[in-house]
Length: 284
Image (tube, rainbow, N blue to C red; front, side, top):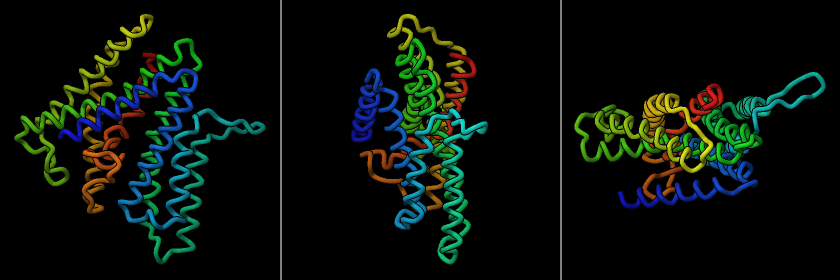
């Protein structure tokens, strides 16, 4: 438990430090999350046993980083508009079908669907984290709102995860999904939802205190907290199911006490797009 806590403190400290880099903040942040996306997707390929098949893994990991990093504006070519993210996804599909045609005896259709499905899911989440960085940086409030978005995107699911971990450790009695994740409990899930919801409200209050002119919408934050606490549990269970199907305990060992980077980001995958849409459709 001590190793897990120390790793969490170090990780949070790094994120907070990056949030105050001034004019370099958006590119540095987007670059970090693009690399994180590549690492997370590499861990999934490793779990599937595809990481050493370099004609598959190398283009997949490279396109994962690019898909996350590309902002979601369109590139105008003549009278046509082309989305950079969709170009990356289309290239992945073309390359993977090309590899399957060349190596159809070893590269099966199940692997193809796993690659395309998980690529879409992972890059979609990280893409909208980067999109939150790009979208508002040019505004008057700029860096403060970017910091707010990132802390909210990461903070709610991580606080929900922490609440579920400690609540399950000290009060857990009833198993939540014993065949998928034996250690998760109903009591832990309840604590997770409570921690995530209160955490969303606390993040809004802290940022309103730090930046005097910033007024968060606490009703939207309450809805984000509740919805994303549930979704973070779903993400955790979904990727636990993938681990079980791949017969592995952790996705890696890059973070002491946590496992791989995906073991830390699994609860963020489903929540990041929800936070993005809530923020930009409501203007919170």
